[in-house]
Length: 84
Image 1 (cartoon, rainbow, N blue to C red):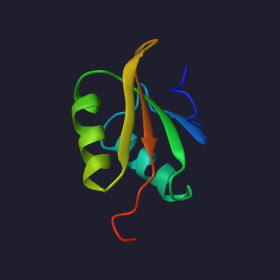
Image 2: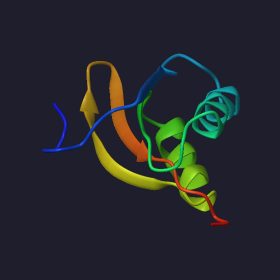
Image 3: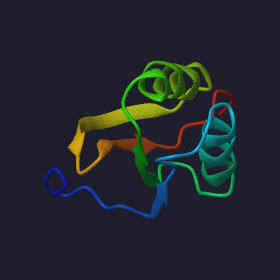
Image 4: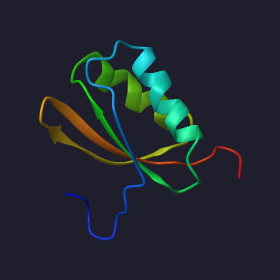
C-alpha cells in the first residue's frame, strides 16, 4: 500500500545482499531513474537499515516511507539530485 497519490516507478529487493553491495545496487538504480521518480526498496533490518537510508539521504534523495515488510523493511525513496 502506498500513500495516496504516490506512484512507484521502480522496485528493488536487496534483502539478503551484503553491504556495501546492497547500497551500491540502490544507488545505481536511482542513478538510472528520472528526477522525482520513486524507488520502492526492500531491505533487511539491522545494519542495512542503519547505513543505507543514511547514505541515500547524504546523496540528496528523499525518504518518503519506512515501514515493516515481510522479512525486512520497505522504503520509498524519491530521487533527488544535489545539483539542480
